[in-house]
Length: 470
Image (tube, rainbow, N blue to C red):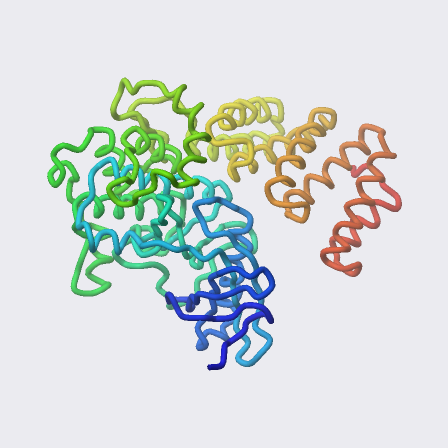
């Protein structure tokens, strides 16, 4: 029997899955002697450059995240034989999908559902931090492994709304699965973290009740119900469900994204209050993964505070029941307000306003969260524009350190901050360090883009004869 070999080293053994973008095969890596999963685009998509681009972006996006709840990415490329098809090589995930779990058990206890959901929410918290939104969460894309860990599969439809990462959606293409699509996704409106939270809410509801939340005779009827029909109240189907668990679940199923929880970390916090483990599904008492997780979580568990209010979670619109944390919406509005003040040449109140918002957002969302990073870049920019170079320089240094560790040295924002820092140093009279920074940046960009690239030419000119910009 002839074995198909991809990339000169990956044997395709058998097909184990298929989706809208391609086929997934169990494979064998000849070089490292290990089992892998190999995804190939469908043959009929080989001439569609947009689908090819989206497919290859999955590798780049997920390699950036590197979360244990998502398959590790090993390699990516395009086959060297006809037909030329993009391929993605990743960790082979062995287990059963939550679709299989539902078929076997029909409905699951609160504690089991909370445990499964908390793991998924943890993965979403990591991907959303990079503005990577899955868009196709469903039970068949969630794999329960034998060590009780849950892997979120198939980020092939993921969207990260940044520059060249935005919307890889062809006209006429339906992206997603009707039974798990949020109203804004169906209506082709903006995709946000709350889009994935809506899908996770539908999954958790189904795991608890054994019934699909919105069903219909065809895709159109399901879409119509997703947009306009109220979801069944989980309290009716599960009378004993804890109040906060019911509350966050129904909040996730709100039609308006801004009415849903502010982020996956909020959902995770509520679910963890009721997580009891997965002993009813998996016998993992001696699992190395379980032992490792117990050691990692021990300090957090010992410091966990009791819950006084069973309904403490913020919405994406900033409304809370009740808490005082800053929401993403608050941060976005703070950036817009600061920008408006700066446009009116009122830099001092602009800096003060945005500095206050960033200081509140960092402990809640993290310094490397994409929205927080944007706000930090804006704050440094306001300092720079107002001539406060001594104050702007340390902000750019901190951004360079954080972003390089998170995204690598070639990220657009890293390059931008590197250039701005060098310009700050010029204005402060430190031409030696400024010239050295420009030269290092030039070498770095030449290695990535080539000596003729416009970005390289601009930096080369600055490295040769750096002068402060007027």
